[in-house]
Amino acid sequence: MKPLLPLLVLLGSGELSAAPLAQDQVIKVCAQSAEWPPFMYTDKASNNKLRGYTIDFLQHSLIERGLRYTIDLVPWKRCMELTQRGIYDMMTDASNSLERSQNYLVSKPYYQQQLVYFYDKERPRPAIHAAADLNKVRLCGMAGYNYSGFGLKPEEVEMGSQNLAQTFQKLKHDRCDAVPERLEVTLGYRAQGVVDFEKLNIGVGYLPDLPRSTFHLMVSRNVVYGPALLEVLDEGIDKLNGNGVAQELAVKYGVPGAELPRPKSKR
Image (cartoon, rainbow, N blue to C red; front, side):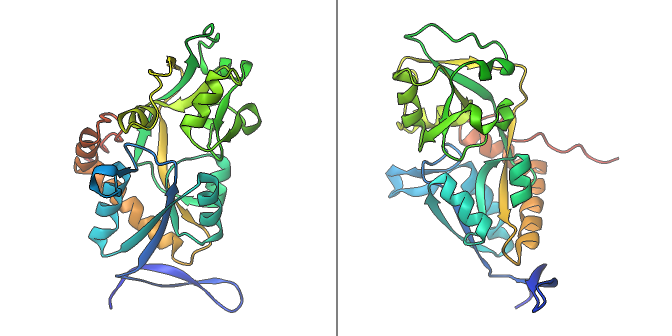
């Protein structure tokens, strides 16, 4: 079988050397069990088949290159740990941070989300006017999530929840004053009937001083074909952002603007 791309294999000395990535390589992928609609979710009407923006991206980036993949939904912290160890080849739908860029091979961004915060409308609204105000109030978040895009350190967010529903319940029970979160995925949870912040009388506050948060595919540094896999993913991202497919997917899944801007043509 013809090789697709060079990859790295371990030598007896522990050094790395180039070798081919098989055309029919099966890529082991993990994603969070809490799901991430509309980017990654199970379609109850189609026998719980996985659907979403990310699934279509993988189809275009991997399947069209002759690579197959399997995907498991596991708790997010576990997904990150197993990917870092090389049990999984890659994970999806991850925002970047200094720590993550050290632990994983990080793809180019393939979509973006707006950063907002949620508050309980049955209590006085917290005095949050900009991102710098977030660390002045009690914050709830989810285990393993990255809040650096909000300008927050891990110790500034109580991250004991496994999903957004649990986090919102903590907010309703006055265990925190605000929940920093991504707007599009929260709307996705509402559309899927998982948790509806409006029915819980929870309001959304905007943080106009923050840029949109980009999301990436992250490849294990402990699989020998990691660099080659990253190259395939980056090529797919460039192609889909360049030919308008990413924009079509954003419209398809109800998140126009989530796609990255098309690269400017070179003159």
